[in-house]
Amino acid sequence: MMNNTANKPIYIRFLKSLSSLIPGDMLKTFIYLNGIHKVRKVLRTAILSFYRIEHIYEVIGDFSKNYRGNFSVLEFGVADGYSFTKMLYATRYLKCENRVTIHGFDSFEGMPKTDDSKDRDLIANDGWVEGQFKTDFEKLSEYCKGKYFNFVFHKGMFDKTITPDFLETLRTHLPILVWIDCDYYTSAKIVFERIKDYLPSGCVIYFDEPEFNYGCRYTGESRLIHEVNNGLFGDGIELVLDPSLSLTSNRIYRFININAKTVYDRVKNLNSAGELHRRSNDSPFP
Ligand SMILES: C[S@@+](CC[C@H](N)C(=O)[O-])C[C@H]1O[C@@H](n2cnc3c(N)ncnc32)[C@H](O)[C@@H]1O
Image (cartoon, rainbow, N blue to C red; front, side):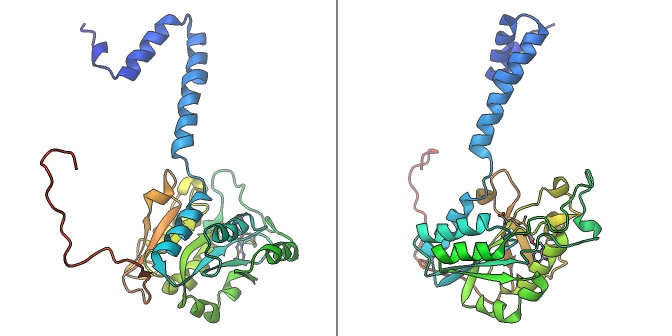
């Protein structure tokens, strides 16, 4: 039989040679798992994996630099303010505290009761429980007041706190980032139903738990994404995955509404009548 080792990728040839130097399957397996598999995994994770705080800086930085006006960031599910205060600090670091207001929505009573099967953990029936993430709102409020000014808390259930008056403020303080971290499909659905007509196209929507039930489209935030993209929230509305922000996750989307009433005001337009990409040389070089 012809030996086709020479045709194998260099990585496989290297492994074959290494394997021939190690005695016994037990030692080969130990060295492979600990010296190769783990190292590959650590490197992949370090380079490609998603860390949910990074995009806060990218999104707020981009909008505050490249677009005119005042903006809102909306967080649905604040709990003890872990991500909320990181977003506040980002506005300070990026020197846009005067232009960006962070709105935090939560009952602060923890997860509500639900009997809806669309909220259920299907893998081990080990879903969130009533009262989980309950927090001391007064303490959080004092902490934020002591350090920041550009925030508003909306305490209560979403169906009561996402009011028409609040939504009208989004006409002048355009939402740039919506942070959905309320875990349940039923909670996320209320949020989306209320805010969808107030979001400009291009607004970033971050979902914290789309991997719930391995991202199954019948439950959790994945169900909401699936429903939006199948027209259940209206024609012309889409959540488009943003791979440059999402990286290996499927957590960050750009909201698109072909009938959106408001648009962002870009500082420098990307298109002009005189634009032309002039020929250079014909090689692959630019
Ligand atoms: C996972 S926690 C939020 C975690 C937080 N973003 C963080 O970074 O630590 C989910 C929160 O959503 C809130 N929540 C869920 N459904 C809600 C609803 N319908 N109305 C108000 N709050 C809700 C709960 O009170 C809980 O604090």
